[in-house]
Image (cartoon, rainbow, N blue to C red; front, side, top):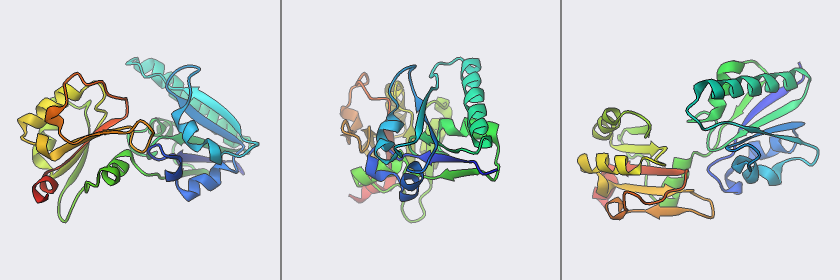
Amino acid sequence: MSGKLYALSTGPGAADLITVRAARILGSLDILYAPAGRKGGDSLALSIVREYVGAKTEIRCCHFPMSADSAEKEAVWDDVAAALVQAVTAGKQVGFITLGDAMLFSTWVFLLQRIGCPDWLDIVPGVTSFAAIAARSKTPLAMEQQSLAVVSCTAPEADILRALHQHDSLVLMKVYGRFARIKALLKQAGLLECALMMSEATLPGEQCWRHLNEVNDDQPLPYFSTILVNKQWENAQ
């Protein structure tokens, strides 16, 4: 089989933070699949990489529903995975782009479950959103023998609170719509002074809050909002 599928990580948002490898591959594809959050809507991932896409590449935007309807989402994952395999079987060089890193809290992983691990698949890693936030805020993710936990704010409160107690440094992802709840847990754990929040890191709308106790519970937040906690770093300053 001469076809190949590339899962391409776009990085956190800034176009110059995609990898050299991803940029090179983007320029040589026959077909590029780009995820979109709304039907007929723009693809943020595509806007990040558009300058690297080859002039002859066919772009196919696919809508991945954000609803709680599991059957609806699984049907889309099935369809897109089948389309990717079909294109590769036809001998095409195919790409699928995804924000951040393809293997972390990514839609791509659901496609990977369906595709498996064939020889014609190549996954290209990328800069994670929290790596970008750490750099932009000048806050280490972990130091010396610190443990680092990456936690989804969709997890049960007891699990999040346990992680806050057990680890020295934490990344709290998927904060959108859950800030008041997470702020209360940070206060309960005595960690508000060790935390910061950043939204849309490296994008034009980037915002950073370093004093979460001063942020209102109903503060409007962009979808891409993440909290970093480093217990020792606050104490070291």
